[in-house]
Amino acid sequence: MAVFTPSSMRAAPRLYTAYAAAALGLYFILGPLGLGHIPFFPDSLTPGGGTVWNGGDGNTRGNGIRSTDPSTDKFLGLKTSKIVNYAPGYTVVENLYWYNYSYIFVTDQPWHIPRPYDQIVNMHVDTRIPKEGHEEMKVYAIRNPAVSPEVTENGQLGSTISLDDAVDMFSRAVELDSPMMINNDDNFVSHYYHWIGETFLGAWRVWSNYAWRTGLTLPNFKVIAFTKQWHRAEAPPGANGATWWEDTPGANKWFTQKFFPGVNIESKSTWQARAESKRIYRIPLAVIADRRGGHNGPSHGWKPWGDALRLPVSLDWLVNLRSRVLAGYSGPVNLRRGSKPKVMYLERQGSGRELVPEDHAALVREIERLGEEGLAEITIEAFSSAIPFEDQVAKISTVDILVSVHGNGLTHTLWMNPGASVFELQPAECTVTDYSPLAIAAGVQHYLVHETSFCIPEECPGRGCPGPRGINRNDIHVTATVVTDQIRRIIRSKY
Image 1: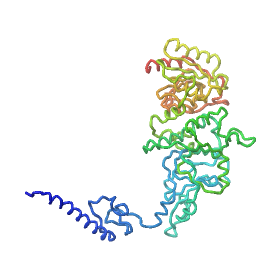
Image 2 (image 1 turned 45 degrees about the horizontal axis):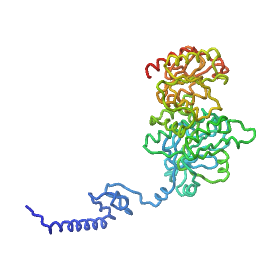
Image 3 (image 1 turned 90 degrees about the vertical axis):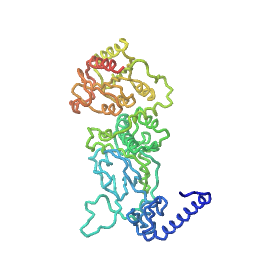
Image 4 (image 1 turned 180 degrees about the vertical axis):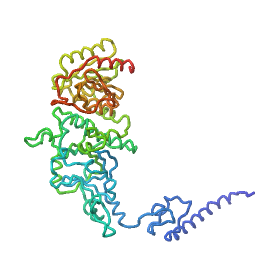
């Protein structure tokens, strides 16, 4: 049996040190020959990252390769475009370039860009307007010359560009603040529902899905860009509401600024100046929201976010926004939950889209009876521009059951608690699915009421509303007890 003495114990470290020195010497002598890998050495200790010999022929006896060509460093120094999340109409892009009204993608992997491109960006919402030679989206594909004369540029993805030309063209691009959300429409957002409930909501869903599937903590948007629409105050004389992004009551601006305090909202004038500068711009991280692109998707269902709202997200993806809107609220509404469920009838009488007077009166009576029976706390409300948006959201956020004729106020469904219910009243022959998807997205049960019956979204008739006035009618009928009897069932089963 060997006996370890203090002197032999002191000798052991010297022996190990000598062995390690010899091994390192052999490694650095044999390394350039591709023979220098030491099996039990950590890869991180080897030159060039461990898996290759830096400066060798790129081989390490089956242990992997690494490019030794100087062009690799040149390519890595170029900020190439990468789509990191996507649904038709809504695209999250790293290093999006912009020049003279064209969105530019610079990549050596053009097949990673979803096609058709009209699901990413479009020249106009109204596609009948001629482009007059303008390319809304350009893809520059970095690749080498063809390997044979039979290979042509016809049918290639994007326009071929050499690495050197790509570096010369794009490496000096002016960097813009990001993350940036871009509304790429020339219409349809000067309305609370169309901006917050459609275009923004789809973009927020894709952004939330990006966070969900990567586990990343994504920063707030620093810029909201309306590249094709004016601030209302700067719109040229004669311009109508379709050409600016702000709605008349001011909801679009109020909500956008509450979502992202300190956000910079850019308009068409800013982007016109950038186009006139003839400079190339780079956005490190951008979300493009394109209404027409969403309508081009396979699941559009008559709406731009048909595909986007199918993406999985965290259950609190909208609660986060509601918390931002209510942060610091000190108004007259009590945000605490009571002992009874709250039922609100959000009436629209006098708006042009309304119940016949006798049915409206009957509905008010039947809803008030719920309160008299002690089943619920009742509110009859008529929102208008005289009521601050913060108070409107505060009131809705405490409601468990909402009743309203089809209209803009149902966008507020987004701020209800998951598990709440909403009854939307429409003409008997109409099924207009503008607001039911908002309820589903918010985790709210939706009931579409057709005069003498109701249905839930998955069982309702297909979308449509015949007649010259469509949904915009002032003679909508409803049997009040169809609504209140179902409210009683909900209260008894849930509360």
